[in-house]
Length: 274
Image (cartoon, helix red, strand yellow):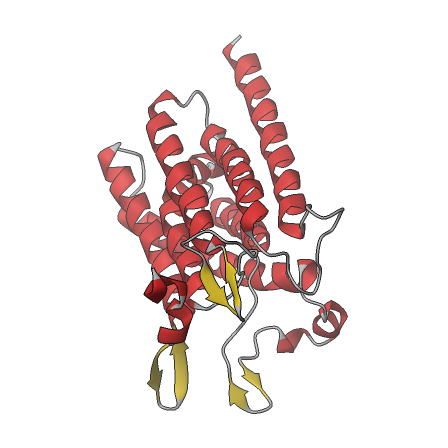
C-alpha cells in the first residue's frame, strides 16, 4: 500500500503542455465527464426508445454544458470563495485563467452552482424549442451520475477537496498527514450508487419529473454522507459545531427542494388522472 499511500508524490497533476500552457488532468476529467453524460443519454434514448433525436440531444447538451460551467464557477464564488465581493465587482475576472501573467487555468467549481446553471440551461433550451423540460430532466438524472465519477476523479488527481485525517491503511499522504481519499468515496456514492438506483427504477417511473426529483434527493444523501470523511473547505471550516459543512448544508437544501418537487409533481399527476 506504500505506493498508494504516497501516490501524490509520484503523480503530476499536469497531463501535458501545449505551447507553454499546462493542461491539467482535472480539466481533462471535466471534459470527459460531460462527454460521458452525453454518451449515456444517447445510449439510453436508443435503449428505451425515448423521443429524442441525436441532434436534439447534441443541441440540448450545448445549452446545459454552458450552464454547468458558468453556474459551477459562479456557485463557487458565491458559496465558497473568500473573495466574493471582489469577483462580483470585477466579473470579468471570474473566468480569467491568468494570475500575475501566469496561466493557471480556471480554479474553483461548485456542484450546487452547476445544478443551478444546468436548470437554467434546460429551461432556456426547452422554452426556445417548445419542449417539455421534465422529460429532458429525467433523462439527465440517469445520465449525469456516471459522468460525475470522472469529475470526482479529477478532484482526486488535482489534489483538491482532500479528506479528513485518518489511520485507515488506504489513506493518502497529503501535507504530511494520512487522509481519507474522500474524492473517491464521493465518486462511488454520488456516481455509481445513484446511477444504479435510478437506472433500475426508471422503468417504474410514474410521472415526468420523478427521476430528477429522486436524483436531487439521492445525490444529497450521498453527498451529505461523503462529507463525513471530507475535510471542510479551509476558508470556511465547519458551519455549525464540529461536523456540519457548507456542502452538507447545501445538500440539505437540495434534498428539501427535491422532496418538495416530488410532492408537487405527484399532486399534479394525481389531479390530472382524476
